[in-house]
Image: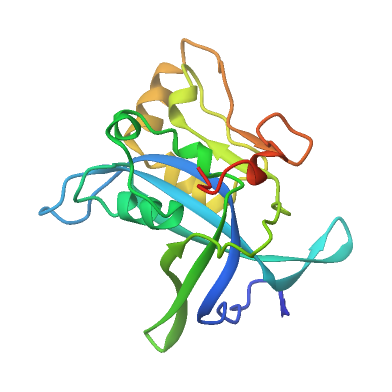
Length: 220
């Protein structure tokens, strides 16, 4: 069990294959490129919780134990050369059909279980935990429901001013705020009110279907 010690570094999640649940799919918009060789591209962050690795946190004056979380950023593309497409196909255990490639809703992966391969990288005398691969559960493994509320956010949901879910971490909000879409829509928001908001839904929310996990072998 790791503990939150007010800003101190956490022990990295152990390098191993972990049973994980995706609880966050966040569109962070077109991010600036700091390399002239690569154009700015629209990005998405996937967030997983690992129930087998807990952390102690202070919430509302109480000490609680919650699953450790890890995230990974991808270019929002299902092209043959993208990194997101092989990740999702490895996770679901089969390739996308042509129809699915025509318009796949990535928010469908929220709540889906997987085996998450965590690998360690040593950099600047620190050890970082990274996602090395995402695989489907073994057939005899029971599916878990996410402990954290689902975090779903898409910039396409907004016509005017963009608002953030209360559960969105500040570091993700900062990434969204530097996107081309956020900057442009904030300018337009001077004349139009907010018309939608990203949403976080728990087990009783409309974005969460408690029966979805048992109906199909393919998680999404």
